[in-house]
Length: 242
Image (tube, rainbow, N blue to C red; front, side):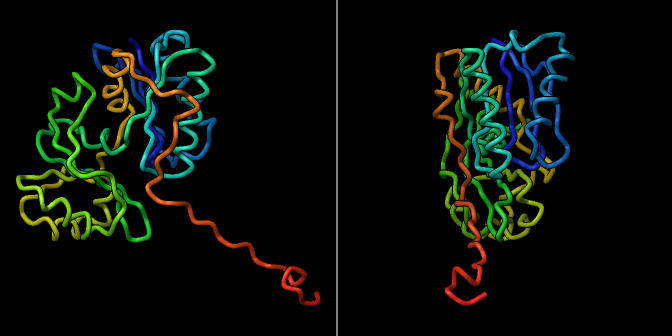
């Protein structure tokens, strides 16, 4: 089974093609993911480099968040439209799960994304890399949350044992998380991001078992509600003379 995977929840978006042998190709979009055309062009280039067309794709996997509003909408809309148009299955994958499955991860992993406004999005997992790739499943110890770094660290600290932190949330908030967790926490690197290849590898065994998400039920998980700024009232709307 050959899977096209899309990850647009984080600032550096990516697309990948995976199958039972592993990652066939992956491409990163180095600028913030804002335009649908960029994702489609990168996907076309990726398939062209493999010498295949869209008909060679047997299913899709897409990162569903938490993550940025615009990127999530673009990635999910692209995956849903592709799946519906070509009658292939699609599966949504948790962004934090994909981020937690970093190369060499084994044991407690705390993926952390920058949620802005002084907060982080994170969850705690116990990772068995072999099982994750075999079954597409990871053990979640703390559900995804958006919180102050100290609050997330305090929740994770209740689970004993060495802990690996990973994700772009460490750029701003790594020191505060380490202070909450103590010496038991190590840093896997600020540049490690959720990647489309891992989204695809986690989805592959689940799609092969017949799991899927109806395209119309692919929903983004933002982690927080978008801010709606009030429109500035005109003098007429306030009842004042112009």
